[in-house]
Length: 375
Image 1 (spheres, helix red, strand yellow):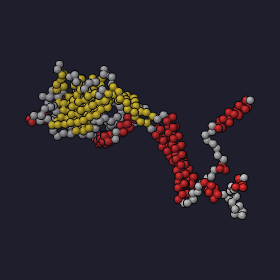
Image 2 (cartoon, one colour):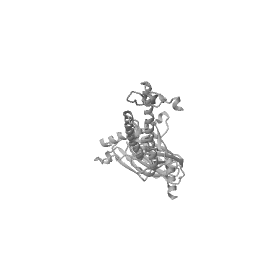
Image 3 (cartoon, one colour):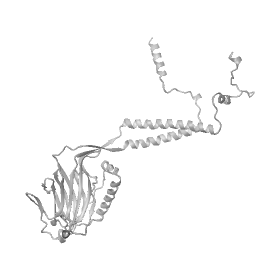
Image 4 (spheres, helix red, strand yellow):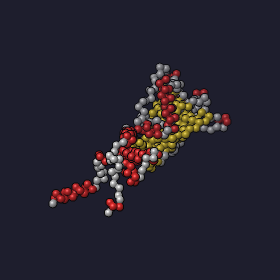
């Protein structure tokens, strides 16, 4: 009884076979079929190899949500060189509430405005990358994932005395409230007072005004090596002494989570405006460099993602099965068209009569039904 049950189960399993086996004596191999099979296998191997590289690659996923963090401080990282002596200029931040932020984290270093050959080469490379970023936005994803491994060359130590150096490098960082504000570099050192702040510009001669500048780095939030910001590498040279440079910056809080870096940073976009201050002609304003920033209420989450293994296997099966089925159908259609074109196509019983083998007396051994035979 148990053997009968086992035999019935085996028979049932055989009936469910969706891949019936065909005896080799019923299979006919042709040169055209072999050629198509060779092409199909080659194509399968190439596409499977390329699909493996797609599986190894990653992509950046962007999600947007409301930024609910209003209590934390915003860090501003600055590295800017101004073509004026350090004793003639001052840098600070004034936010929307007319609150002056202490600039104790900024350092003033006398330098030469001209770059060394190594620094100039780095600066040109940085400008080329900025040009490509404006055209190919996908390059920013590559910087997020891998980042540049090189670092800008260090500022060479000048052998000249500080009194002979005519430029000033302002670098460091400071923390501000997460509200709109204005980071500026203008004439004279800043002094606080109850109604805001002021700069001692009256003690500086107009002949020394020169706000030609180079922004080596300007970022908001945590410093991430390799990330290139929109103003990095900006260089402005002016022949006029009373010149105002304005940068209008929109900051977007960003949480970056990749396989190499996980940090809270801020990406920003910027528009520029510059004009010459001519008080005799009725122009208003103060000469200097002004960076007016505003913070977006939306936060961007940038996450690096990888294709799961099951999806890779499904795509691989689709490639192999699709090519195998497609090449089989194409081979059948091409063979049919060739038979029609060469007048070799026969239909029904006439094709079997034509292909039936002949006996020794040159008669066909195919049985032709007759009325007597039918009886």
